[in-house]
Image 1 (cartoon, rainbow, N blue to C red):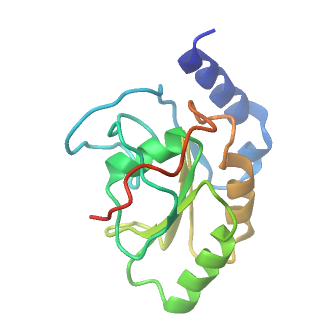
Image 2 (cartoon, one colour):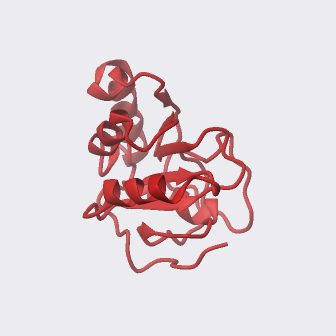
Image 3 (cartoon, rainbow, N blue to C red):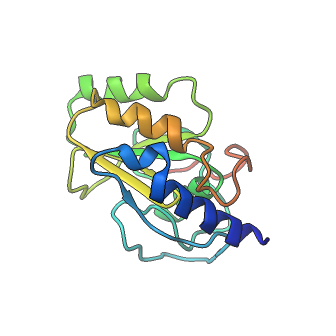
Length: 166
């Protein structure tokens, strides 16, 4: 079975009966991995939750500036979860998000201009949008999708890539 087909099967299993399906508000999507492209790309979701991406991945970590979608999506392919928040989110809420990702090596945290909700959690093929950083669904999302079964290249590096911001 090819890696892309295995990823699709795992994504389908998760969406149809895995514990993540119990998350109220969870949206799931189907994307094949390995679609590397250069330049600026357009994504169906905002922020993106999979699809074509730059050949270089974003180093996992906490950022105080927006990231390029194309690099962050490649990190999602490697099994990262990308927590994004509106740039005007208050400092106490951002601190709570930083605490939530602390010690998690496959996470990205960054502001995201134009976000239609205060906070969004994105993984390859999955997304959850919430209003507050203390929403318990965020931890469940992280536990389910960080290095989760939907990532086409789960376990690939989340360091040694791109470390810049937009």
